[in-house]
Amino acid sequence: MTSKQRAYLKGLASDLETIFQIGKGGVTDEICHQLYNALEARELIKIKNLETCPTSVKETAELIAKGTGAEVVQTIGMKIVLFKASTIEKNRKIDLSKIR
Image (cartoon, one colour):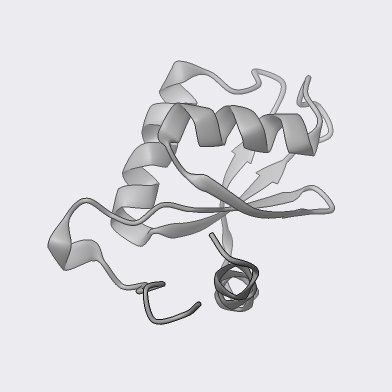
């Protein structure tokens, strides 16, 4: 992902609502599965890392990215923004190929 593509996604994410929170249970296979499904439907999601989470925001973002195949767009404060192009054609809304 180029810096321009990342900047574009950050702009899109600024208006997004947080759809998921990671708490004291941390990142589990079940959470990764739910986030994978959310990424397939939306492509770009925002997650909040609660203070009770056993891992830091950056560690949580890396664990989720590894578990879902997504890319970390940014971590800011306690928020994580992830992007994964949907494998379902009708769910594809974001086209990064034109941004270089």
